[in-house]
Length: 251
Ligand code: NAD
Image (cartoon, rainbow, N blue to C red; front, side):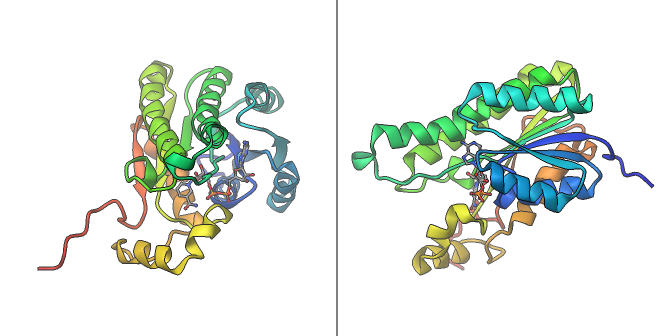
């Protein structure tokens, strides 16, 4: 029997790796036709093959507005509908503020914030009405991390952009939400999870006591993408094992 999402069409930007790939897998398992958009188009193509005949891959650079516009218009033209847009593209280029080069700051903001704006803008333009747009912010949107000024600032901006877009698009029935993960084991953070002191600090300050797996986050994205969340918009959902909670010494 077909599931409720059978035949829906989703574009997953950043779908070649990590959280985006886990999301693409869940959507495809739910009967959704998945268009993987990634700057790593070879990686995206391999993923699409893994998903079988209902998936395809397109090269997208979220910083390039034309390529973002093209993937959403192309998906709509090819499949006749566009239901779900998920934006998982991101980079976390480090640097302390006093040493941070302007171009490093700009690159992070371009990918994590301006790219998010392009995705929401062109997903909403390609949709006629209804459907769901989901972005990935970060625990670092509200918990500062020294050495990641550009990343923290861009993700905080993306969280606010989510709320503004939800206000503007609600009358078209388009829901706009975000998922805010803690430390998730993906290639993006190998440089952090590989440092014992950083890893130990996160584990100690996370009530559920472990890192996230891409699937943990993808399940939340799936929920926000599906009609199970039909009355939720403008929400930034923490998915971090409780790492946003302040821990005081035990009494
Ligand atoms: P990842 O590196 O595994 O995947 C990111 C994907 O984005 C890659 O496939 C990459 O090729 C693609 N990408 C990068 N730049 C792009 C661009 N300019 N245009 C198109 N695609 C581009 O990382 P991930 O951990 O799965 O990250 C997914 C999202 O989750 C990111 O926005 C990241 O900031 C966010 N996030 C990750 C963590 C974590 O701990 N892994 C925590 C909080 C938030």
